[in-house]
Length: 325
Image 1 (cartoon, rainbow, N blue to C red):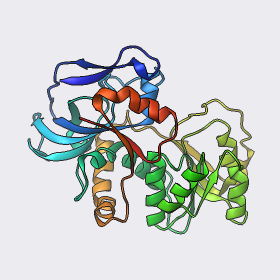
Image 2 (cartoon, rainbow, N blue to C red; image 1 turned 135 degrees about the horizontal axis):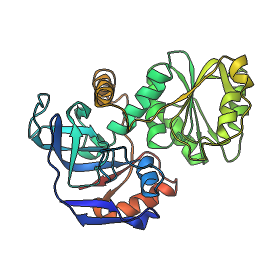
Image 3 (cartoon, helix red, strand yellow; image 1 turned 90 degrees about the vertical axis):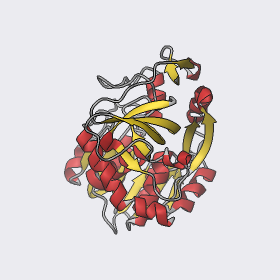
């Protein structure tokens, strides 16, 4: 099969299209003939040498795919060869064939293309767990997501809005802010021209927001603490501006804040299966009805994976970037 490998940690040109053996599914696994693969920030970090695969995972980048099941391993009962699925992988998505755990495969919502389906697993699982399970966002609460125009941000805005929250976002241009508002954000703040903590205080009449989804880190962490409401929950899922910062923790005590975070890739197959079933039950009907949509910024053929990474690193995209096979 054709696959994309990282020759050595570095720039996008470190990605090369090579020939490799087609993997075989083990017990409780399926082999997927990949039609499309989502491109995510962790793929970029892995290419840079900053996010190594967990033990036992493929060293091929790519955490979410869509396609047809080509073969199933022993013990698989949910799927059969020929089924079309979207799937979360622990690696290996940038290839013509990829392995996924049976429980990490999801049925494709009716009406979606294979490119749209490839945008679902990593992104929607991340948002569902961190916003609604870990962050416990409820109807009537205020929600803030940083990087609102990203794939994660686009999804978080729509789901939080649909489930009855007041939604705010940050983004790096007026065009991106308008995009966030078109998806359901009550207000989007251009972080290049305004301080989001001050703007949130004004927008919420001084009360702050109940849940914050932060993939930026760095100096944002102190401002997150500043603009969080009493009993607020701050959920960290990445650190694009760095994980080591000096912060004043006193407001955490005074406002009874929860500062938490998670990563999805190293979690157990059982946990990932739990998220897959929750999405099929609670979110897939919203996609099929058109209430929530998958937004694709740009697609690239597998051979142009380096260009896809280069495009992601410009931060110019609004929505998801997808590789097509």
